[in-house]
Length: 492
Image (spheres, rainbow, N blue to C red):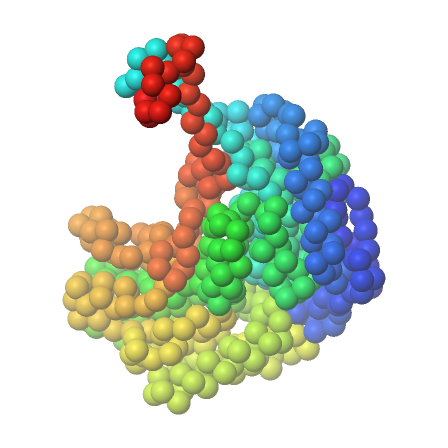
């Protein structure tokens, strides 16, 4: 069993308590790694290292161009080690190699993009309305950033925070999920190899009550960037409020995909399948509500179920596997409980509806791809995030009802639209209350496009040029040509 250490100040260390916990392989159900169980002492050490690096150490003295060069070097190292990083992450969270490999290889693009953006951060010269005065603004790093990363796509979602934060000049303390800490620690080794000064990136592992609470209340942490559930997001907001920390929160979703009657039915079925089953439903943008026009509802349902029945389950390391395990046993239990709730509320289960018992699933934590028909939008299965391979089909009569149903949720992370109408393709994104709207595609992402939610799905944006603004402060500078003011008691 592999034994990991935490990464603080460019050094590998055991946790202050000397304790550890096990990480499990979701495909086999067996432990495969020992992860340090950190507490507030480790957090304090990591935050101090990050604070010193920014305000007293080498990092704060680097030019923006030098910071960018380090990010690009890190991107090269990630590209070099993409295969090994992929293997670690698949073993740790059970997600398909076919998906994780694409994510890990894509990480380099984020590091290259923000590495190039690092020395393009500009202030402004303001033509002020005061005589004999020159004014301008500076863009400066907000300070130490705490990045709290979920278990479903650990490396990708970590780099979505790390790349713009480091490009802006911030330093970081990263807390990966206790279920999937290994890949963040493997990544930290590349940070050191790339030549980042000590203290710029730190990784502490453990549980929310031991690590997360201290990290989100620490007085020297200026900002928290979090991806995860809304309950944890609320707790982080409460913790951060005491010291007025800045926040970027990307929370849950209950995303609707609307299939209009003029849609390419085969493409809409394929998009619906990809939106919910490709990542075993373990993604905040899962298209877990399929809103289908009543005139094509039965035809769509038949095609969708027929396609879902062909899903190949099994070892997520095999490229042919299409549906892998869920990441933890408690998550499996949660998914099954929601399936039972849906049945009790009258939803019609037309496929799946139970843990998978297929031989190719071994002893892993698998749930059969599950399809519910005749779902009403007020059912819990349509309102609450399941985070598993479970989809609800809901019929609608006309466009207005489709938009009403789609928006009738506490969440607002993403939405999908399937149509051949230019009018619908341009009207729908304006009518849907979601941070991202895909038209005739689903689950696409790029370092160039902002991503984030509205309502209970959080606030702030990751990716794109917008993301770097989340890690910068604006400072105003006034230069007067006059030696003294005319009246020191009057504001000039």
